[in-house]
Image (cartoon, rainbow, N blue to C red):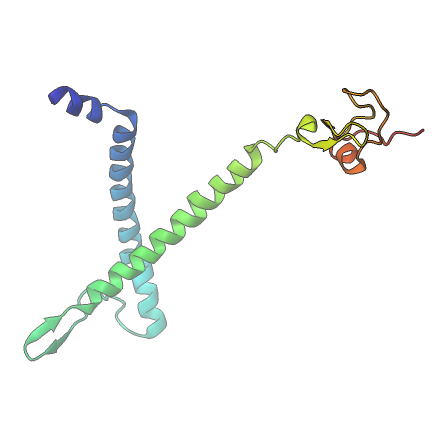
Length: 152
């Protein structure tokens, strides 16, 4: 039983996930600090308020509702999401698009039937491999294969 647990813990993806969570927590602390130090005061300047939402609250029948904590957390979340999207997701998508292999066209995968013996032959073939009769190559398959059109 302990060997299975040891194997689980020592798997590469569990270690990577733990590192990712630690980095994510540190990143969240940085973004929250940035939000509290710069964004919240800028919002306060724009709205002519204090800008510190963390202490904002209202009371109903003696019960305090600290809605400012929610507003501060929402601002931090939006900043975190924007930074992650524009600094991680968009660049990674561009890198993946750049290095993604273009789908190779398999010339032999495009098949058609021979008009004489009805056997399957490649679409770019000019002669049937079964009955040896001459056939017209498919012009679309020739263009995909980047082969010149054949003249008779």
